[in-house]
Image (cartoon, rainbow, N blue to C red):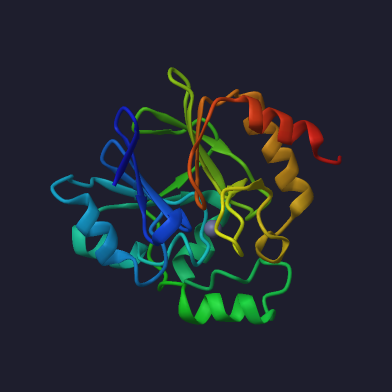
Length: 223
Ligand SMILES: [Zn+2]
C-alpha cells in the first residue's frame, strides 16, 4: 500500500501499478480482478473497511467486489448507470464489441460475480471527504472521486498513465476496445482537467502530481 495523500492509499494488485485500487478513509475504491481479493486484504492489514465503491463496473475493477463485500459485510456503491452490470456480473456488454476476443477473455477470466448494489452514486454525492463526479464514456456509469481542498482525484479509467505493452508510464486515453463511447469520454477528460487536480490517481499506472500535464493532454484532444 502506497500513501498518496492524507487518508489516501494506492493498493496495486499487480506489479508495476498495472492495475490499482485505492483506499480513501475507510472506503475501498475498485477491487481489481477476480483473483485480487487476497492481495488487497493483505495490503490493507489492520485498516478497517466500512464501504466499497467502484469507479466503474469493468472486469479489472469489480473482480473481487462480491468476495470482499461478502467477507467483510460492507455495502457496495456504484455509479447509477453501471448498477445493472455490477449486479449481473456481465460486465463487458457495453464495450464496443462484446464478442471481441479480449472482451470475452476479460469476462471469463478476470470478471468477478455480480453483487447487489446498496447505493447508487451520482454527481455531487459524498464518499468520505470526496465528492462524486460523473465521468461517463469509458462506461456509462463511470465516476471519479474528487477532494477539492487538496486537489486529489481518483480518476478511474477516464485516463490511464501506462502503456499496456511496455508497462512504462504514459498518459493516454483508455484503450478503444474497452471504451463504450470514446467521444463522451473525451468530454469527461476535459471535465476533470477543469478541476485542476493536483494529484491524479489512475486505475492503471502511477499517480501524477500537478495539473499541468492533464491540462495539456485535454487541450490536445480532438473535438
Ligand atoms: Zn480498467
